[in-house]
Every structure is written in C-alpha cells, then in structure tokens.
Image (cartoon, rainbow, N blue to C red; front, side, top):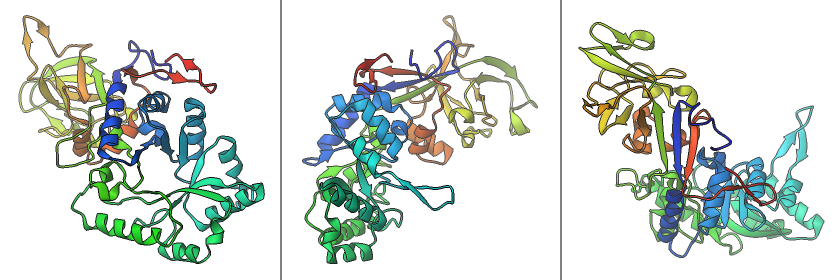
Length: 403
C-alpha cells in the first residue's frame, strides 16, 4: 500500500501510475531531443503523480537535471534524490515579507545549503545572487531567464541590453544556462514559435556565450532548431500529448478506476442528480461511483442527455449523466452487457474514468473544457494509489523507504 493514500479497500477509486511507462516516455523524449540534454520538470508534486516515486524513477532512467517551481519543492526533491542530480528552481530566490509588509528574509542561503540552482528572472534577483557570490568569493551557479514574448517571467529586451552593456553585473556567478519559454509550442504552425526563437537568439547574442534552453514538451517536437543544449519536458513525461491533433507519441502513465456503489433502474419522467439536469428518455440503468470534484474529477464533466464526460466498462462507453457532485458521479450503464457470466455493471465493479478502457487523459481534458495539465494536477488524495514498474522512494538520508 502507498503510505500517502488510503487502502484499496477503503478508497472509492484506484489511481494506477505506471512508472515503467514514465521511464519509457523519458527515453522517447531524450531520443527526440537529439544531442541536447533531456531534463525533467517535476513541479507541483510531479504534476500530481508523486515526486517521491517519479523523481527516483527518472533518476534511474538516466535523468540528471530537474526543474521545479518553488524553493520548497527543490528542498524536498534534494532530500529524495540525494546529492548527485542538478536541481533548478524556476521562480528563483524570492524575498519574504516582513511584519510591516516590507522586504523580509531572503532565500539565497537556502539555495546554497541544499545545492539548488536558481533561475534568475528579474534584475533584482540577478543583483542579489551576484552580490552573494562576490561576498563569498565564489562563482555561484545560476540560470538566467529571458522574456521572449510571454510577458510573464524573465528579463525584458531592454533589461537584457542593459546587462550586455554592464557585463560585470554577472560577476560572482557561474551562468549555466540562458533560458526562455514558448507560449504556443502546442500549436506547431503558430507564428509565435518562430518569432520567439528568433528573439531568443537575438537576446542571447547580447550576453556571454552560454548554453541555452527553450523547448518544453511540445517544443521538443518543433524540431532541432528549438532543442539548443537542454530541453525541459513536463506533461509529456506523464502521458500528455505534446502534439495535439496528431497521435500521441507518449505512453499512458495514468489510469483512474472508480468503484460502483449502486446501480438502479429508472424510467421516464425520472431525473438524475442535482438540479434535475438529466431526465431519463426511457428505461435506463444508472451506476453511482464515489468520485467527484473534491477528487479532481471536474464539475465541468457533468453530463447532458447525450453525455459529456465518459467512462469505460466491459468494452462499452458509459456517459456521465447529471451533475458531477463533490463525492459522486452517475453514469448510464444501460448498454453494459448482462449475460451468463454475470452483470458487468454491479456494485464493486471498476469503471475506467481516465485511461484503460476509458477516455485518454487529453480526451478527458477536452470533455472538461481544459487541458491535461489541470486534470493531472487536480487528482485527489482520496484515491488509492498504485505504482507499477518503478523503484521505491528514498528518505532524506538517501536510503530506500517502503512505498
């Protein structure tokens, strides 16, 4: 049993995570990246799948460069993976807020204690990190982010030009990578991909020659011009399709299966669920499954008469009918076979909600009107989690831990 989840007996659904498929996806992306180093993005608890299992699996698969968003995530990952891999913090070192809401304690020391590398996003972060290095008489490792069009994080073109005119501002640091981030990589024909790449090249020429990183999951599939020296896949590792509109080149990592609590017969004019939004058009069989929006099964998957969200049972697609509630969903299982072998739609039977015989991750996202990232990172803690095909977690001493 996974210590972080309820037992299979006590849970209303089973979340299966295929670590062998995760490792295989890493190898697919690494080959696709050609000669570039293939890192892995493990932010948000490895996209909701559990960094304590995902991190060691990718390390064993040959990944030695990892990215997370927050300093706290990096500290946890360092405890899990030990001293060898390189860990970058995308948000860089931040200042805390003191009691008077002014600048509070700074975090540079914590980066050094845990051997974490900041991605510097602002001139303030750059100046503080450079000063820290000069004060210590050391070259402190860092990456520098350039804003090439997202207007979110990174130095602007004007700030990059000013840095070029005063290169001594980089004293005290060992600049490992210059990075940027693509806004539209999942739309291969979008003109902004080329525009951002060209702007990235232009800004890089203003700085000391440094290895570069631009491509996320989808960016890897834009071609070798986007690979540079290091690629940073995230969602594709976990089975999300990095090439929307084309066949998914990645292996399925996640399978969510909900247990049927009850099956009942209804007929017109009976309705199902809150708001009476679904009305039976004739004799129907309705199965209730204990999964809801509290578990990350989004309310936007609520079904109309024709069904919006879908499940899979005994080779039959079963639509969500009525509204998704906090703890329950209802599915129309009328077409699920009943034969001499018994009733496939019975209490205790498992309905595939993501993967397996059900819709793929990105199909669930499309049904919910969102993206696979949100589905993954919303997966709840009430599921019984089963990990297959990988290695165990490690504790803070780097020793194997049960899991």
